[in-house]
Image 1 (cartoon, rainbow, N blue to C red):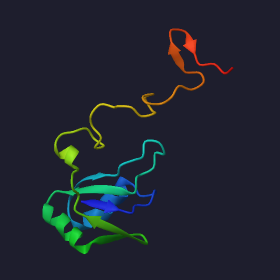
Image 2 (cartoon, rainbow, N blue to C red):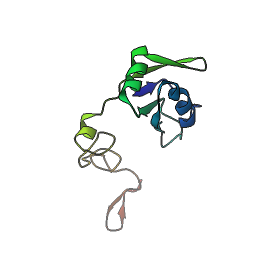
Image 3 (tube, rainbow, N blue to C red):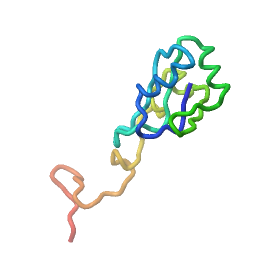
Length: 120
């Protein structure tokens, strides 16, 4: 199941404690932003028995401290379901500014063997 609207202070241990009141929790995963090292505001919880998750989903939300956190059935993206790479953007990179494709040369770019664009 997926829990949304998490605050940045919530930890996997906190969620495990909260969610165990509905049944035996086998896994809690809070995805983290790799740049800020903060949680992305949602989490996934897996129960040993599916009926426990159904019980929580029927409530539509849970209360943590003073926050109402929406819960819903988690679904896999089509890419992940088909065995594609995580993140959902597979295939080779074509163009774009990150890898230098399709952008005009800029000051300091190396154009060829030992050649650089210089300002006149």
